[in-house]
View 1 (tube, rainbow, N blue to C red):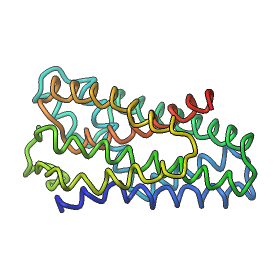
View 2: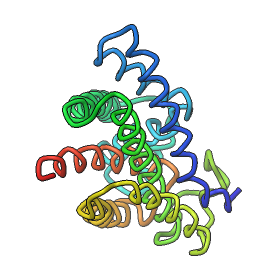
View 3: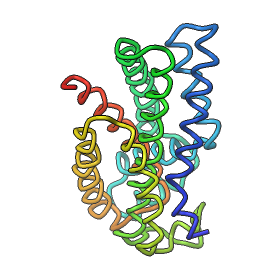
View 4: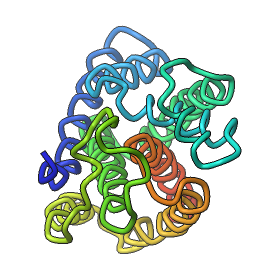
Length: 235
């Protein structure tokens, strides 16, 4: 199970294809906003809200806990606190807003056929790169919780570098289809947020947990959508 981390980025491809298919199908009958909401809902159902659950737990723990042990105990609690509720509501709303803006921009740039292809590329980058970036914490950091009590014990084992290599390739492969090399600045932009989360995880709990990985994926995904929009202002 620990070696399955090498395929996390590949899971992003399946999620991206699903999101694109749901949007295309829904947009035949519904407006763009409703289609985007259904698309995001489909991605959540497909992954079992795995990453959203991590986002909720992380904000509850980091927001409400003072000591390391208190933070970890709150993160294990199945109940949702105010910090987690606010985080997931704002995350969902921001994601819908950003995706709507991305689609509007692409509609002004491309015809219908090229629009869907570009949209798929954006989703593949966002879903695969965000997962790979999150998985790197299993190599760079130590597990902070108790492995026996973890919801996903295999994530507690330190990942070997070669297990991250396939995800790195899957994450960067879509950039081949982008005509402008300026898109390669996007992964570099994520480095700032990776360094910040790295510092935060070590400061608060001395490492990572599965919830940290899920929350990181959500944060990286949103940052990627923002980065695409910013890049398009200059391209």
